[in-house]
Every structure is written in structure tokens, then in C-alpha cells.
Amino acid sequence: MKDDLHHSIESRDGNPAGGMLCQDCHTSIDMHGDGNLPGTTLAQVEIECEDCHGTVSRFPWELPLGHGEEHATDIGDTPRGLADDITPEQYFAEVYDPEDGYLLTTRGNPFGNVVKRGSKVFLHSASGLDFEIPVLKQIALDGTWKSQNAAVAMGAVGQHMESMECYACHADWAPQCYGCHITVDYSEGKTDIDWINNANARGEDGLTADAPLGTNGLTSAGKVSETRSYLRWEEPTLGINGEGRVSPLMPGCQVITTVIDKDGNTVVHNETWMTPDAGGTKGLDHAAVQPHTAGREARTCESCHDNPKALGYGISGGRFMKGYEDGFVVDLETAQGQTIPRQTQFQSQPIPSLDHDLSQIVTRDGKQLVTVGSHWPLTGPLPQAMREKMERTGLCMGCHQNMTNDELWSQVNSPRFVNNEQHQQVMDQALHALAKEKAKGQQ
Image (cartoon, rainbow, N blue to C red; front, side, top):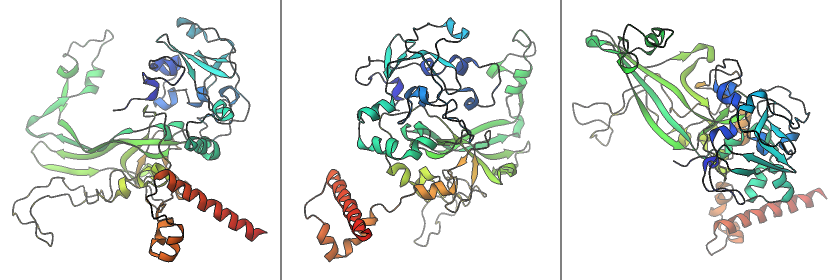
């Protein structure tokens, strides 16, 4: 699969060939902690994309502390500035000249390897390579956008930069494993490794006198097995993360459980579990994620604004994988849909409580179907108002519905083939004509 651009050996113009390393972005606090025990990695990781790249309107040192992890609070507008020195812990690593100053993370800690030089930003990689970091405000000032799409998405639509994670657009793909089918079988004396018992049996010296550890360690009753429904490696669904920003989502644990007792009886069959404390939604979790699959070219406008999956309605609107509650049998059948063989078997067993596709998290009228994150109060699907504002379906039919009106269509249609660029020019002309017509009406 395509790797993150930060790891790409082929660098942007002016930079040496070679990828960055994990520790180039993730600070000592990210990697080794700050003395606290966070419940999630989101609480421990302190870096934000804007810490190095800034925004279209502000250099990194002009941003206030807390930018990017506002958690729906007012962070003020005081510029964070730069640091003249690093923390004592960072002296265990390579110490670089601060030049005009070390950049700061959103939490106010200095990057010991990222420095300001004039209006430019340079990163000293642990690999020994030095990279100039593209700074968005400088790109905007110089007018050196790679495409008009980028100038519009980041410069003209302010809400993108204010409410979204950068990787909501720049993550090319995310791993998506749908359906976590768990079977716990207690029949015939079946057992499995009990990792909790193994952990509790360890002594101060890391050993246990009772039994070997690991896969040869202590066991408990019941054999656990796991399968899945389907996999995807593609553009992800979008939702709100714990920081209150639009973020990619991926399936968490979508637990569907079967339990077989010691006598071989199935006492629980393909059961999904409800979560009363999460509004009565199914515990088929989606979770916000930073996939680390960034590309230089962001996902297209249409991939979010004209894509039901991105909005949370499921792949292709969730219409292809419906029918879980009845199960799926694929066999010879009549024209009326009646199965012909007397003996058949399910290719997919019924899941009685699952009446929607596993990729769907919310309905169009705003009903949340499954849990979305469980550690942060702000996590959830895209809000109703945001989804209604985002969705722009019927982009083609806005114009092409008029193809049945020969008289009207002949006035604008070209008899020759129109390629994509020429098609955009037609749309541009139509927009200008509409603006001109409206201006006449206001005079």
C-alpha cells in the first residue's frame, strides 16, 4: 500500500532524497510520556500538522497555543512565538543551533530539531538529512499553489482550516476491517491462553514459577476465534474526533458474539451489544484515527461532498450490504427467489439485530446507529447541520437534467467532444453569466 508522504524517498524540489523518521515529528513526550498515564494515544501525542506547516493565514509561530486541539474551548489569540532553548530532557539527543528560534508544539514544548530561518522552517532529521518544510502562509503569499484546487480548499474555504484536521483531506486511505465476529467455545474442554492470568502471575523479576509465559503460559476455559465480514483499504468515513475536529474514522471493534457452552449448545448466536450510556447505539464502534497515509495531493472535493460514505451513510449509501438480519444464502433459486435445493447453508449467518450496513454510522435524519469513539465526549458522526451543509449530490444532473429539452440544450451544448478541462470552462462561463444576470436585476 502507498506509504505516508513523510516517509517518501522522493522529496519535494530542493530537499534531499530520503524519508523522515517517526521521531522527527513525535517528541520525547510523545514517545516516552510526560509522567502521566493517558487513557488514549490522542492524550499523549502533542504534535499537530500546523505546528510545522502553519495555516494559510498564519506562520506556525503566529498561532496560539492549543491550536489544533481546542476541545471546543476558547484558546485565545496570543501568538505562541518561538523558543530560545530546549528542555533538559532534549539534551540527551542531538542539539541543533536554534538559529531564529525553535518552533513550539501546540502544547508549548520546543521542537529540538525544527528551527526558523527567516520566513522558512527547517527540520533536522534523525537520519542526518535536513529538510525545508513547506509553510502554507508563505505559499499563499508567493502564490505558488500546486493547483487551483489547493488554493480554493485551504485559502477560499476558511471552515476547512478552522474545523478540520489536515489529514481529513490528505489521508489517501485508511485500513478498514468491518465486522469482528467472536466465537467463544467452551465445549469438549477447550481452553485458550489467558493473557490476564499470565500477566498477574509475573513476579518482580518478570518470571513466574507456576508455568511458562506467552503462548505456552496459563490457560482458561473457552477457545476464542475471530473472523471478519469484509476489508477495505480506501478513503475513510469522516467524523468528529476528541479534539472537536473533522477527522478520518475507521472501524474499531465491531463485536458480533457467538458463545457455545460446555455441552456444545449455542447459547448466544451472532449477538451485537447495545451501549445505553452512548444513547442506546450498537457497540459496533468507529473511531477517529490519524492513518499516517498522507499524500501531497488531497482527496477531491467530490470524494467528501458527493460521497455518502464520507458523510457517514455507508459505502454507496449502505445499500449493497443490507440483509444481515436475514443472513445470505447463495444457491440455485427460482425466478421468484425461492431456493431450489432442500439442503443449503448460509454463506453469511444472520445477525438478528443488524439492520444496516457495517459501514454506516448515522442516518440522514440524524439517528446515530453505532458508537463513535468512547474516550472523548466530542467524538461522534458529523453533526446534522454539517452534513446538510456539506452534501452536494446531483452535481451532474444540475445541468444535464436539461438534456431532454432539445431547444435549450442546443444553445449550450457543443457537438464535439468536450474534455474535462473544457467542461470546467463551460461551468465557469455559466457561473459568470448567472452573476451578470443577477447584477442586472439589482441595478
